[in-house]
View 1 (cartoon, rainbow over the protein chains, first blue to last red):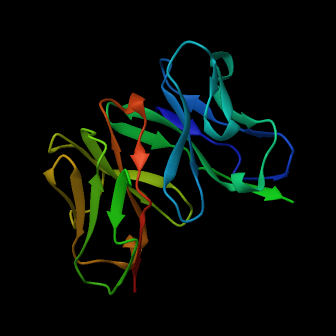
View 2 (spheres, rainbow over the protein chains, first blue to last red):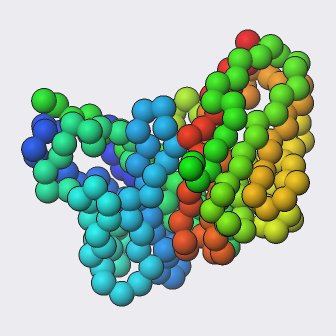
View 3 (cartoon, rainbow over the protein chains, first blue to last red):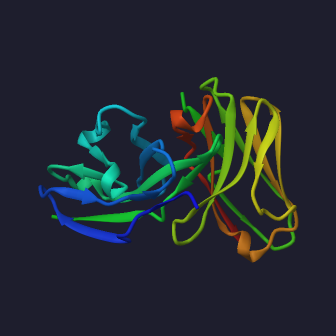
Length: 112
Length: 113
């Protein structure tokens, strides 16, 4: 079945350290892939998206993600994490025309 | 201006009551959605409306019913509320296929007591 998986439920990093959040997808063809962020008490905000072309995608807030077909992965990265990045992060992909499916989410904690 | 707005933000009600959550988007998008987020942050799609037609209706109890008076609004009505309905409900919208990404509202936290 078409799905996205986020293997890490919770990640803790120190402020200023680099970050990588993992996302694996299971789709027959190359899917559209998205990363969203949810700050506490807020809705989801789109960070970046991949359709085709360049496998390294730049997003907002200094985030980037790399699509790797050989690994069926679309990992989110940031070179230097800020305390305000503490949030829940969701990888997502559409299953059908109007049916976006989300991973279980990864909670990011930032240590001072 | 808020792109996707939901009201109310918080809703506390007793079991058995009927309640509604309103959603409006001013982005001119042609498709709107309702998602349910449980206590473990898992997001599940409930409904999708495109040009006033229901596209997706997942295995949601028929106590839940979406109502779309126009393509800028998608309200969620819930009858005979149960304890298990407690969750955060998100409205979202998109233009065209899901490849464009969604814009989410800030959510409605429903607590059934």
